[in-house]
Length: 217
Image (cartoon, rainbow, N blue to C red; front, side, top):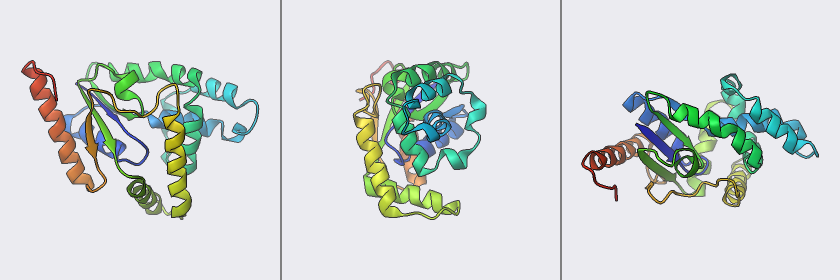
């Protein structure tokens, strides 16, 4: 079984994808970490003429070992870098095979990111699109950072999220738009456990309909 989980930053998609992977015993890939790793690798070139070529080279050289430093990869400023490299077509192409290989493994998989249901896994068994309003997403990300001992400027973080949303919406190479056959789950008013229960219910219903030869509504 392949489960594709899409949505904007801090919507809860990563937490839900990890929870679904545990529940169903599936491998999990946070594909956003791939773009964050590339962005982090070229952070010192972001305002220079070599930024694009360096990002392409970093994407082509990426392997699982580049995903180990979660503290650096999940920092708010790294998310901004990720959205800047994600608009480069060659970067997306370089990371496409990595994601497809993971998704099509013999055990199935849960992948979360920005264009999983539309481009990476258009044939996924179940697709979820997770959303939440900007204020709720800012507060979640702030609490995550504060739990690691990081001081947070909520005003700046809110605008980073809004800026990233705007950039991602204009990304011609794969924004975070909902696939036509994806199930929408708004987590604005839901805690982690309630959101996970709702996500599992969606998967169970979709798989039951599929087993019965029906198309999910």
